[in-house]
Image (tube, rainbow, N blue to C red; front, top):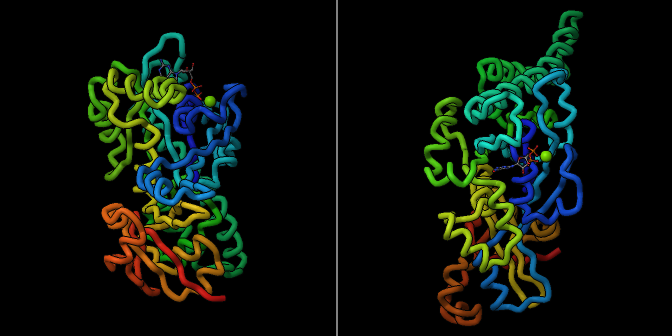
Amino acid sequence: MKIGILGLPQAGKSTLFQTLTRGQALSGSSRGEKIHLGSVAVPDPRLEHLRELYHPKKFTPAKVDYVDAPAIETKGRERGALSTLTALRDVDAYALVLRAFEDPSVPHVMEAVDPARDAAWLKGELLLEDLAQVERRLERIEKALKVGKKPEDPNEFEALKLTRACLESERPASSANLNPTQERTLRGFQLLSSRPWIFVVNADDEQMKAGEASLLAPIRERLSVPGTRALALSAKTEAELAALSEAEAREFMAVLGIEEPGLTRMIRICFEALGLLCFFTVGPDEVRAWTLRAGSTAPEAAGAIHSDLMRGFIRAEVIAYEALAKSGTMAKAREQGLLRTEGRDYRVQDGDIVNIRFSV
Ligand SMILES: Nc1nc2c(ncn2[C@@H]2O[C@H](COP(=O)(O)OP(=O)(O)O)[C@@H](O)[C@H]2O)c(=O)[nH]1
Ligand SMILES: [Mg+2]
């Protein structure tokens, strides 16, 4: 899973990036407007417990990649040519950073601090960016039509028209109600609004004390898009937390009233937004977590591990993590008959421990 971080200059994008990646990738490098890539293990107590049970040679948590991009400039940017964004196309979702913190030493590109205004501005810019891209392609097709040529791909033509109408009414491309064939024809465009957006309000500690809801309400109201995903955190404070030992961090969090770090909250929201789940494979060689689209079948889970396992899939032995944890060990769980044999139609559940039987 890869998340792109976008926002205005000085919104706290790089600070957020540091928070979300536990600071590993920025150390030493400049804070300048360049692209940073970072990756972080998905914290999961279930997987830690499995590690204790198996003492595997190799331990592989699921991971999330983050891309910190240069800011979206407010002036002098050519429409449809957001060069800063080309590096950010290849992601699964966007974190849109909104500055709420007040700090006279950090200027705001739009004078006053107003996260709801910035949210609306960003939404508008990203939709216009997509619209420019869609229109460019449509113009080319329409020009060909005028000289009597048929569209190469009628599905694409239809999909583009539906998407244009959607963007023109200020709705994201993801809500264009395309059928799966139409959707496929537009995948290559990697439209910014075809992927989920998660608004991240970067607040200071004082503002956080007033509660997350009071920070998010004005943004939800302004955007008036049902189901807008958003969270609030103090990127600066949490970046400092990330540098502490676990015990120290816990103490500091208690003082500040932070119940759960932004790092895990962000991952959870992204999993929800993308409809993902985790399943596990265990053994003395490796204990590992895998990310999978919710609703995937056992052979699809096998395919996430290796294409051979999907091709030669026979059956899956499955036990829910909770059931294993209750039994204590896999041997006991087996004795108690808790291991199930599942076939091709089984839909893998979050927390399943899966062993694929296959032959190639
Ligand atoms: N007071 C305060 N300053 C912050 C916070 N987050 C970021 N900053 C500061 O704002 C400036 C811009 O932050 P940066 O992460 O580089 O923003 P970017 O341009 O969006 O990448 C830096 O000086 C940060 O230290 C915050 O939550 N509170
Ligand atoms: Mg930056």
